[in-house]
Structure formats: structure tokens, C-alpha cells
Amino acid sequence: MPRAGLNRAAVVEAAATLVDEEGAGEELSLARLAEHLGVRKPSLYNHVSGIGDLRRELALAGLRELGRSLSRAALGRGGEEGLFALAEAYRSFVKERPGLYEATVRSYRLYAPNDPGLGAAEGETLEPVLAVLDSLGLREEEAIHAARGLRSVAHGFATLEKAGGFGMDVDQDESFRRLVCAFVDGLSGRPPSGI
Amino acid sequence: MPRAGLNRAAVVEAAATLVDEEGAGEELSLARLAEHLGVRKPSLYNHVSGIGDLRRELALAGLRELGRSLSRAALGRGGEEGLFALAEAYRSFVKERPGLYEATVRSYRLYAPNDPGLGAAEGETLEPVLAVLDSLGLREEEAIHAARGLRSVAHGFATLEKAGGFGMDVDQDESFRRLVCAFVDGLSGRPPSGI
DNA sequence: TTGACAAAACTAATGTCGTTAGTATATAAC
DNA sequence: GTTATATACTAACGACATTAGTTTTGTCAA
Image (cartoon, rainbow over all chains, first blue to last red; front, side, top):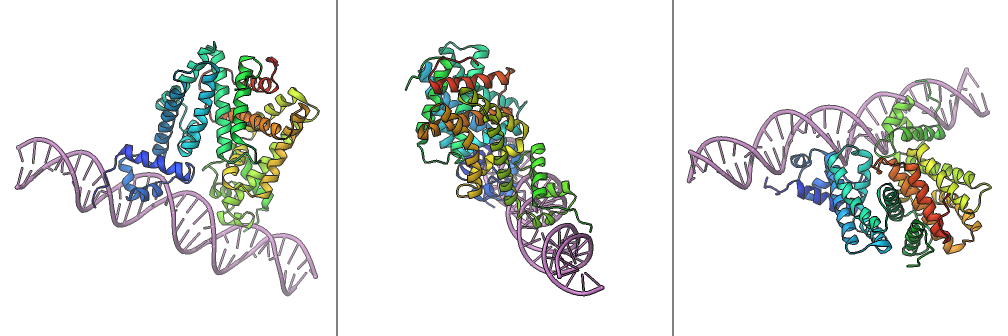
């Protein structure tokens, strides 16, 4: 039995690739992952303590990567331009890493609350959003409301899009652009910017 | 072996109750449902052709009920008032029937496209939205964009709320009100209505 | 170089799930 | 009352997660 050279990080990374290809729901199984890694199922227990642990680790990885994407998008961009960049980055992340994103959403229901690691990672995704909102003069409770709104907009559109929930043959990029425009304009109380 | 008096409708209804209590993900199993109904697992196959069939039936029931709720909300309400009523009805449905709603979302990815029954039920949920948008002068492609936006807003907020994704202790009703306000105001290109 | 030890792989087994096949019985129709 | 069908059952299979116990590999110190 030659060693496969696995470790926790490698297992999680392989799982992340797998969920992006096949989905993070019931499609993810230790059996499938073990097969992918050329190893027997129980061997995975040397690196993760079960499928729950693996899913939590995927959620953590997803939140961290999403946070990085959002931070990058907000670099050097303030005001409404920053909000558009954040929304677009959010949607892009869901498109590029669909399984990993799905894992982060599952996390809220299944692991949180009171998981300090996930809470911290979630906080990191909020930070760039609050920074951009601050540049628009929104602070404290007002900023929380606006952040929730922006996240709802991006999450709602991206998940419905990913799930194929938009039936009609109408351009989805344009739908998203209009949605974010409407939200941003409504937020600042100005007439449509038309960006 | 006295009969339990089951039929397809009773099985689906019991499943709907179950998913509202325990979730529509992996929590739903034929084993659990059979136990709930006081019957052995294989007996359920007399009424549904498997767990896939049951999930599809749940999605259908959820879409129909959501459609009814939206239609009721739009009765006698046009313009921005109608949009607020639709958004609130959507969110209320998710709160009252969380499992049934979850089943409808799963449906897009797993059963659709090309399931005529689900497609029709989905169309029924779109109808009242398009009617209200029509009262605002939005037609055709423009209405589709707006409908997608409203749905993204309602779906995004409601699912994040349900999943416990809003950590901070800030009023969620107020967050939703502001989000819908911003979207509606941004949609019509007017200054904030403050409703 | 060798011996010991921990890490990482394995086999075997248990229990849950969905599903199918085949069997018995209760209800309804005649 | 006989018959037919619907509805329930038992038994069994394969896929899954998980645990326990075993073997091997790689490393590090003597």
C-alpha cells in the first residue's frame, strides 16, 4: 500500500474541485472523493473527521476566497463604482466556483451560528462592503441595512441564475446590471445613473 | 395488516409538513416519512415512484402555493404598492413554509428544465408580478428584467434570513423594507418614496 | 544501519438509506 | 360470496458514512 501523500489541505482542495464540477449537495460523498483521490474511503478519516467536517472546511474555504474576491474588487474603488464592482465580483465568484459557493450557503444553516471560524470568515466578506458603503457616507446601522441589501441582491440573482431559475430568453447580464443600478440608485436616492 | 388509508396527496402533504419542520435537504427521507405515517418504507412506492418523484411533487406544491400567495397579494394593488405587497408576500411564504420553499428552489437545478408541470407552475408565480409591473408601465423585456430583479431581491433576502446569514443584531424587517424601497425607487427612477 | 514510533493507508463490519421483487390481505365491484 | 385490485408487507441488494482494528510506510534517533 504505497502512500498517496494526502493531507488535510489536499483533501479539502480536491473536494472543492469536485463540488465545483458536480455540485455541493448530495453529489458530494466521501466515497466519490476517495475514488477521485485513488484511496479507500476510511483513509480520508486520517485527514478529516467525517463528511460534516469536510463540508465545514469547504464552507470556510469558500468564504475566505469570496472575501478575497470582494476585497480585490473594492481596491481603489469607492462610491457607486465600488458597489457595482462588489456586485459583479460576487456574481463572478458564484459562476466560477459554484460548488464552493454552494458550500458557503449551506454553512449558515448547518454549522453557524457560534462557529467562530465561520463567523470570522463571514466577517471578512463583510469588511470590503462596509468600506465601500462608508465611502458613500453610510455608517453603523444604515450601513448594515445597505450591506444586507447588496448581499441579498447579489446572492439572490446569482443563485437563481445558477439554478436555472430564469426561464425566458432575455439577456441575464442586462438583468443583473439593471438590478444593481436600481438598488444603487434607490440607495442613494438619486435618479438612475445609467451606468 | 390494517390499511393506513394513504394516497398520493396524503403522502405529499405529510412530506410537506415534514420538510417545513425539519428541512428539505438531506433531512427528508422516505424512511423518516414512512415512520411518520406509521407505515413501512416500501409501502410509499404505492403512491410515489421514489424520492425524486416526491421531491418534484413537493416543488410543484410549493410553486403553486407561492403563486397563490403572490396572486392574493396583488389583488387590487397596483404600482409601487403592489410591488411592496408582492415582496412581502414572497418573504412571508418563505417564513411560513420554509421547507416547501426550499423544495421549489431545488427544483430549478434538479428537475427543470423541460418539466412542463413545473414550468407551468413557475409561470403562475410570474403572472401576478408581470401584472403589477404592467400597471407601472413596464412591458416585455423591461418587465422581465424587473421581475427578475424583484424575485432576486425577495429570494435573496428571504433565503439569507432563513439560513441565519444576517449575523448582526439589527432589525431584519427594517432591512427588508429598505431593500425593497431602494429597488422600487431605483426601478421607477424617482427619489426615495419612504414608504 | 537499525530499531522504534507515529502517520497513513488498509480490511472488515455495522447501520442507514433508496429501491426492487415477490407475497399476503383488505377493500370494493360484481 | 367470489373475484380483482389496491395496498400493505417481508426480504434482499447496493451505495453511503462511520468505527474498530490491523498493517505498512516513512522518519528520526540511537
